[in-house]
Amino acid sequence: MIFLTLTIVISLVFWALRLMDRAVENQEFSLMLAGFLVASSAAAMVGVYFLMSDYLNLITQADAAFNSYDSAMLESEFPVWFD
Image (tube, rainbow, N blue to C red):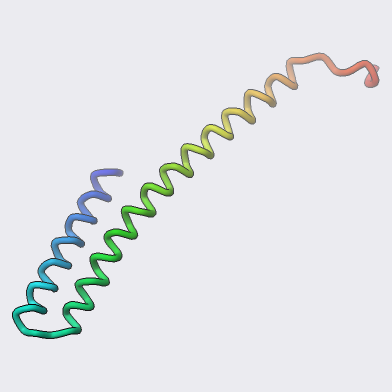
């Protein structure tokens, strides 16, 4: 998954640099703006990737803690008031 994300981000950065190079050659503001937006989307994609990886780690740790708590409750004896 990381290789796919890395490939997409590198291609977006390359595309942004080509757009900005053409903007300088032709002196067009719209190409420069388009290049900036493409570069911003590449940066946002990297940010979302890191945030989601941290979130998924948190979810798996919370699930493991819940499962261990649940299995400990099932293995323990019921309190005296349920007799």
